[in-house]
Length: 594
Ligand code: GTP
Ligand code: SPV
Ligand code: MN
Image (cartoon, rainbow, N blue to C red):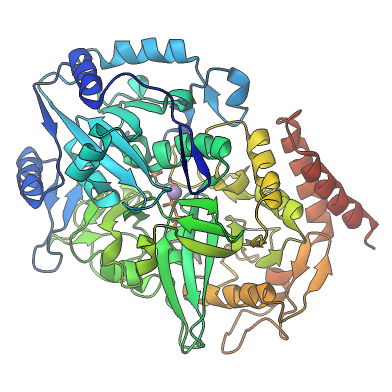
């Protein structure tokens, strides 16, 4: 146990050293050889050559896409698998209804069975990594053991990885242990197991993204959220973005949107021509670790060093920064290819797919050419909007927190919560259509509190209590807003242009935070008055779109809150009283409105 900057670091006592642990895993998994990864260029040379030779990575056109590669995952292994993701906390109740639970004893014996001999004829790679800036007191170290070269290649881009981390661990710093194997890639033998009380992750049977890159969702959200609750901070599924106004003042926002709902895009937003002098800086696009600073503000770091972003929909108009960033030194996963060997995906405005994501000649009867959850992996520094403050050990101060989802109906473009408890309730109430980022049906509205349903490593009731309690420790609380870029008209088309134009919403949010403008009071929160304080200059919207975009239908919201109330019942008796009071207040006002 140690104290750093007011954070009491709680890591379980461990007697096993790093090399003893690696030996024990090797003893069970029986690899042909063991390789300790040092993160050097020479190491990458060898690794990439092997991957190309084995067909684990295919070269893309070296003239137009230098140092870019394509990886095709197993067709049954293309997204996170929530149904086989478990929290193995000592007490079942502590995992909550929001998680699958397995007892640590059962999980360990399942692991022993599945990992036994799983690395025969393979190399066991030891990948030491750091989540967060190397010199930040809020960063955490980890080591992932894996038999997938693709995982090593991705961890190299997504984290600060290599020898210096290994030395720090050998000198005694605590670390999270991750044990990963592709196993036989059979969906029946696929498990993602988390032991928060042991700082341990075991993952087998998948080589895909969040299932396999253990520093990301497994460590930086599920394990870290458990630690964060004990230590008094937050580990969130949030982007971190700096918005600079023409006066040169930068405001930092954190925003939680469920998977594939626009975090990367908002984090890299390019101001449209109607916003001269504005600049946007990316600090993070997926995960935020937020601590209470000495000044009583909330400060956020991005634990990641790269982006594992959704490819479809990315083009020079929607996300010019990402589009430029992925022209070189990028790993593409599950995209299509043109006859010139260039990557191709739905939403790209040029080129024709020749081969689909499975490697078959492209035929529209087989569905999209690129998988809807196809991804790019790129180092963060390649982003033209990359903020140098991503390196600040203390992170950046957060002015506002945004929650948002994909809602074709009900939720207006933007509203502001009335106070902290109401804001936390607004986060709890987050609902969104499911996307291709997780296996299962897409387009179904489900409640996804704080965009953390698949990622919170403990009982949601305790998590909301932890959020509520922050108000006693943060003297300058961020204001909380809800946004929805995805409202549809009767013709099923998006009413709002989105992307760069979302800066109009951000501008309103910042004006509210500076107390420069008033807003309309409504039971669900404060709403903009379109045409007066909300900037619509130069924007042509469809007839009637404005009313629908900014509209709050009382009947819809009465239903919405009834649904929320019954959703919260599942988390009793741990739902904070403050949330129930905030909910009743909204319900009372909705029903008393004429
Ligand atoms: P994860 O990496 O899964 O956590 O997702 P994310 O939240 O970072 O989502 P991302 O920004 O990658 O967006 C996912 C999809 O939504 C992409 O296809 C985008 O093109 C699309 N999208 C993002 N922002 C907007 C928007 O403002 N309007 C519309 N219509 N689509 C958007
Ligand atoms: C998400 O699904 O929210 C992602 C991609 O960011 S993954 O790394 O697969 O979790
Ligand atoms: Mn994500």
